Length: 119
Image (cartoon, rainbow, N blue to C red; front, top):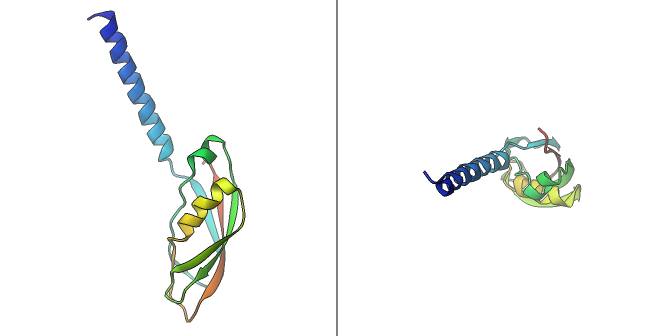
């Protein structure tokens, strides 16, 4: 084999290794613990996707949200009460997918997502 072919093979293998490592990091579970304060029981929770920019910047923190829950248990609206802007969007998107037990009317819940990229 020529030196050129060996170098080319090494580059291909190295590139694949880097891509596999990046994919493993991208799909690593995020530590985003959710706490809800309210009377409605959550039937289905969806964990937020840790934003890549926040992960690379090693940003952690808590995002506090207020959700209006309809009588059928779906999330009607979400309002960000506090938290890092890079994390708030992911928390809001996840909360909109939550499902609660049906109730007699609308209710309001306050939910906190705790983000930690190191876990």
